[in-house]
Image (tube, rainbow, N blue to C red; front, top):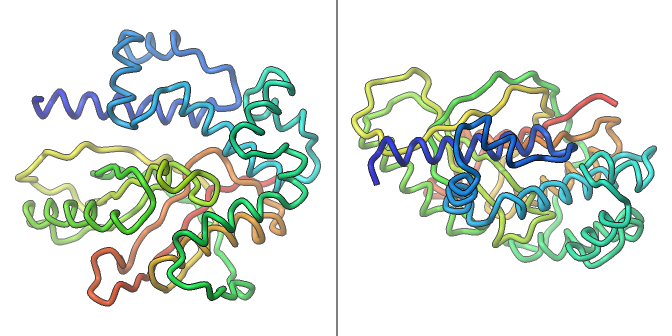
Length: 291
């Protein structure tokens, strides 16, 4: 495949994903989307599946249910019917059926503590130790982040094999002799809700200044600007997912904020997938809105 064709396809797939996040609370019409992107519906589906490994409708359903699962915990004043509407479901019945099929419990059971049991099972799989971390004294800063443009490699799965993807990205950095850059990870899926093997993790390099690149083989994506709660952490593999669990299940509930459908992301000062001692220093950014 030509480089220009690959980049064009990657851009289309990312545009579709961004569109889904933006309009997740509406009845998303793929016909309208294909007209807006000037691509046939058939090609739209094929390009998206090649890039993300699942079709557009599966992604829409997954993102809706992930948003609903978060809102059921954090939005104390909304009924289950309200949350069904807020996540684009036309009827409560279809929402209840989809939610139960996905999480093996009703929204009410989830809201009443089932989410803790569900996420604990996921966290146990990836955590290197059973030790809990005391996050109670952690205070995030609320920041307004600009739009960020980066070069990326997409990785399916949330596990130690992410290291190979970072090594590939590091090779690209060395090939281009890039001196000033940031390393980021975009979490298209919430790893405490989505099965680890299905999580979309995107390793990103953001150039401090657009240099003359020798190797243009990587596609680019844009992370939208927004308001985020920024959490700073040092640790080892397995500690990030514990932080994410605490952020969603403790801090967010007590904070008076809600998260938005936009993905959360990490900016590394030190990347444990590339450091010899396997330790990280990072900032985790959770998209929030005032309610």
